[in-house]
Image 1 (cartoon, one colour):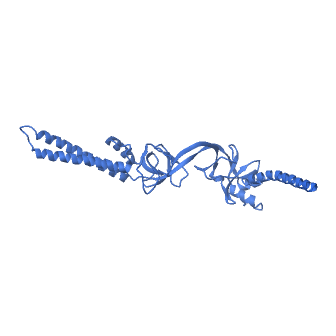
Image 2: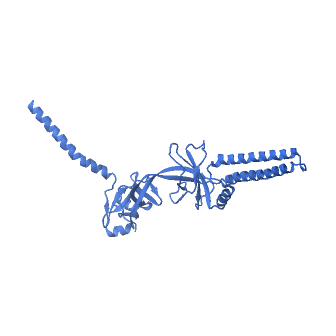
Length: 316
């Protein structure tokens, strides 16, 4: 019995020792998943591959809430303005006519009958109702908070829209997103390049076809075309520090994305890249890369081919 207890204790001790030895190995194996074995070349081999590097610069990144929309057609805006302007002009004219008829229909020397005045007053009331209808249609289309409540405001904004100096965009953010009317950035659909900040922003009427929170915004100097699809982004959360890895450094292999860091005179180590945060002409990366490191920007593909197949030689 005592012998059995000793053997059990010895087995438990050996198991603990085995676990202690396996943990670092497991951690190293997990870390190695983010790195290639590295490759060291001669000076001539590096020149033959045409390798060029660039130093990584510090960058920061904030999470973004994305919405989608399009640039509104100027014809739609112009038609709404024309309807409202025409109704206002007709109402002003009929009100003036009713006022004249009222003056001419009173007194002993009345020049027009009471019936004529009443007809003019009815016409003025009808035209005033037409103005209200035109304004309500404009509110239904562009929201009651549109920044063109007066004729002067409408004229100024329409001139900018007609000349192309400004565009009106309507964007919708996802259901449940907490989005108040605030400035955001707009970029072309599918483009990772330049974006433009919005000017005035206001609530847009709900769109049954596209559920979510909709906003209108004026964008100046963008060159966006009428009917063009856009992406709208609002920064959320705290900024994260990292680096911007150039797009030219990217290498695809082993069902993943990589970049080569120069760690010695002619030594290069392949490091995994998270490409989920594109930024301009590169990718923002917060792990595995630090500012000041040199990354291969030309010849990374040839370097990968040589690493996975050491027999590969640079072409003459």
